[in-house]
Length: 240
Image (cartoon, rainbow, N blue to C red; front, side):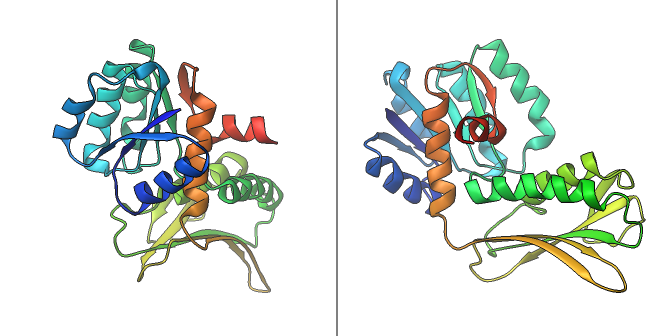
């Protein structure tokens, strides 16, 4: 399979390593809009774009891929308020789009444990829930897409919580997410339920970027030859 890397930063370089280990070929590395003009002649039938760019350019990258007929896997976050628009454009162009706030297999197991725990805690009125997320100082969006996904999973299963808010305690119906940016921390997420008597914590901590890169490449392999909009739930169903 031919891989086009969109965003050749730290994650892009990790993805390159994983692709080569899995016998895929890197045919282009895109770091600015002008680079897209150089791939118009690429054989799109055997190519997949893996995107870890920036929120302010992500939408244009997605639309460019749809127009070129290129399947795309993206780990870029900070654009989810435009999801309906992107999904519609993907369908309009009969495209292929795989998005995820976090490609780590461990994080997606964390998501499943999170929703199960939320269901258990829903009736426990003495416990107040919150989410803490910590990332490196270079991460621009807050809260992280992973924290938002965890919050949405809790709200879906927890009958007393209806919405989330950032860096505030909120009301009994609001789930607070506290975001921290420190040093070069790859990513830490914890869901906390606390009462006057004790505290329950569900935590995932990424040791490095390897798991994210592997998950993104597995997603590219998964969508190869498919059409539509996909996420990690689809990939996890195949794996479990």
